[in-house]
Image 1 (tube, rainbow, N blue to C red):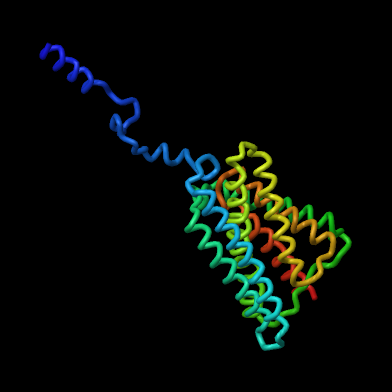
Image 2: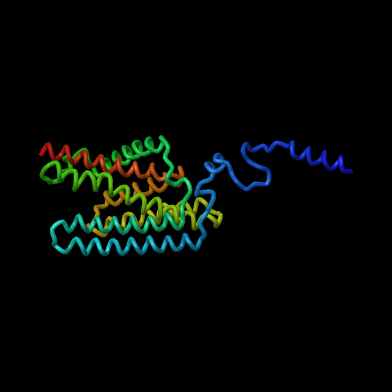
Length: 264
């Protein structure tokens, strides 16, 4: 009996686990398994944390818009720039809180395909916006500024880079993702995705409407940009494609305005 028992133990010890580097009975997952899991399939945050994050970012968005609008009307020198900076600070602070309290695994991973998505979609969106607005019959847009320093500090950096990054983190990396993760456990991923996309798009357009009336063509293009970026985040599971799409979309307008400024 002792010999049979010893042989049985030796036979179990000789069994090779099919997963390399994984010990039998261990719950540790290899790096390959971790890479296959992202926030769309595995919800590592509780619904309570997600709801709290959603409430915080929505309240922050409302407070940031109110503070920014009131600050821009003070008449103080640099008031418009400072008010926008205050808005971005509030949005980014709330976004950081949401990302820390309810982290989304693999959301900030980068792939070379994100660059291709960004450039390709930005070109298509800019061409579509030009057709919608009848740009072929209009002159180049212009931004009346003096000197290269003004162009860099007041146009290129805020409109071309800082604004898109902050807005994509707030509206896509946080708002779109949190709404999707809250609704996904209900068992209807398509409904969760559509709800997340249009909730983010609606808030995105409302934010821009708070500062100035939007022509219908501009509102449609903002809505299209937001839907495109949110859909890209849900499709790839990553945020950088949406960030690059927004950056290249804005930079293309800045480039057109620079041409118009030189021609004028």
